[in-house]
Length: 465
Image (tube, rainbow, N blue to C red; front, top):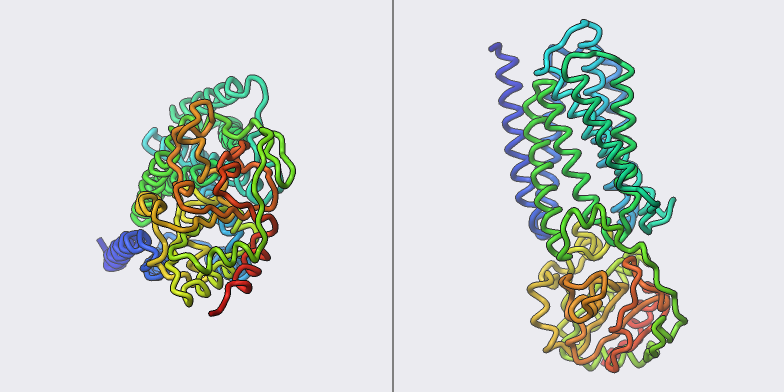
């Protein structure tokens, strides 16, 4: 081994260590920035080391690609709003899967030009193309749903699973055919198209309520594709980083599915949320029950003279970009001696950790953020549970209505607080498409309107003395 090879190996080892440390720090909101910094330094070292590889033959393309990628990343980080982070994560994740598929495609062109290749060479190429194409196409559909470029509800049609099964079988058949040494470009293109189509059709029947799990699953797919591509290129850092992403994404997917008390199979094939209930008026549920509305002044007074308030944020807070107004309300209540906590459900929002990210951006102290298992026993002692757009994760039907689609899903026990205040635009159901009986509870008050405007009005209306 030459001195250059030894240097590259050591650089990749250091990169792997920094990636592992970065992932460790990302497990806590208090150290997440440090984790990001460590991972970024590791990636910088990996890129710099790779640029010293003697196998590089086309520097201009690498330089152009690096400049374009850096500009896109910088522009996205500066311009994309925190509320649009889920779709940006989906898009960037898809880019990773697509990159893995492109690299594998380039290797296939190389070996097909030679005219012969062993199964040892072809199997990693085929696997990388399949997994990368599925991740790329599926992530684009997830992005389109989150960005509301297409309906967020599950899109289904008769015989859908049969069609998906046939496409899956065609992917397997083409993969076996190519892996046996048949370097047919037409079969390879067919494999790429079939895998991409499978990714599209697999995500179409998944609704917005399940999108956090889908994003996490696709992220793990991208990690696996990158790791396999590492075997294609004999690149250690790709194998390490891809394995880390694939493993962490898989574990996160399993944990989030467990948080909803549903299996991965049900998430992928259950078309959850496809049945839409009728939307009621501003004070009547679709079941015919009535709800109690309140004014801003009434709610502000109730909050101001409470001892303990637990805020349950959800996607409604994200859509309205109300996190800064929520922070202002929390600060005003704390000035009056009110104990304010935030209840974070694992799948609130549209990506893993969505609420944590938004509240951190608004400088809400990490000590005030409490996970579901930790905060649920405290609702009974809370004077007020303030719900901001968190519909499905606060629905008591998950506990006591066996016929409900969300029955068995762990929820925030907001209905056990002394008073419940719900901030919503209207009585329309959440992404699960079902009514929330919490709104008909006698101790629940509804405050209708845009969350940002409503919370800002509450913050201003809280008595200062």
